[in-house]
Image (tube, rainbow, N blue to C red; front, side, top):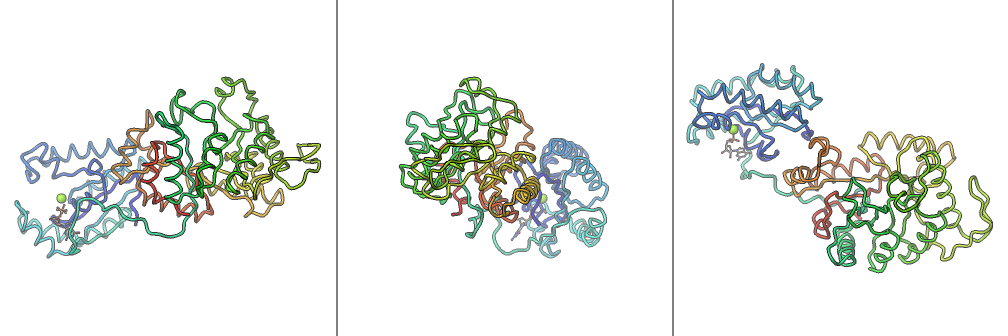
Length: 479
Ligand code: GDP
Ligand code: MG
């Protein structure tokens, strides 16, 4: 059983059963609230029983504060008091938390031996009573409605206090392309780009996608941060001789005439030997249009324009030069040389269910959406309906996901990054939206996306600094 996040985790076990060790292994220090530690804060030490009342008052307050903020909390007490458990569980359920009881099923003899090895052992009859209670507690927990996870800690292997960085198991998974949206190059932009691209190629990322904006968007950085023109930049990346697929995610149809988009993408495709793709979206940010003297019509019109752009690039990428007369587009000829070197994937960006997904079904090779598993599932179903309507096989239009992920070296590092990046967002919300976790956790999540039929993920790091970060997350690349 995976421990959900956030969760209220209550440890249940006799003294010496390994509760504190388990907590330190699986959770961040700040997530664990321990009655022993609080006895030492308000009293003379961890076994100062006179300080118990004060310690538990503090403990309850800490549990309440964390749960209210949506933050995981691990309660490290004996866990044998049903009234205390009921109080914590009630609070957790009010806040939509998963409630998990971790039962330390360590053999009594092991607990006794560990207890007597301690500086201040629990008196033998007290430990005996705890072990007696352990026989009843499993049934109580089942009746109280906890998700129960049992662990025994009589394992002979030495215990370390942190989880060793698990090497991700090799194996198949979704293709992962790096989406680059921030460009913190110092004085050598080309060197920065080259290093990032080479690191991505070496790590085994399938490709590199560039955001297409005229001003850096507030979700990513500040307006005066550099945001290069992507087709020019992709041209430079094409010269590196990597195996990376290269394209935009996404080019707004409002920025350039559709024919010019078709021309740029076809050119990139021949320069890369057929490794280009073209993301196309409706555009959404008024400010950059105003600043660059571009029209920014209302949404319905922009979606019409997106559909025109999609149909136009399709017409210009098709073989031959004959006239084109289609749904919304009429061209006297389709003379576009160089032709793309191969099929040039058109990725329609956005999950708008009425129009955008329909445009993707009609003209796209893929539609790119954002969101959790449930969202992906729903969008996939809607896309398939549109495919049925327009008469295209489901497998001709892929669902890809833009995954903006906080990837830490371990869970603690991931949360440090959350704290640095979250701005005014609630830490728990930010962490959930960006799936804050280590490489292994993200791989598992990507595997679940693959199970939903997502074969391609565009992965963006909100704190991408340069090539080092690409190397750091190499475990997420699977080519
Ligand atoms: P608690 O009283 O339930 O919090 O127990 P602790 O976590 O303090 O563990 C008691 C002792 O058992 C410590 O010396 C730990 O190092 C040891 N211990 C805990 N878990 C394990 C385990 O999984 N394997 C082994 N070999 N020793 C463990
Ligand atoms: Mg302990």
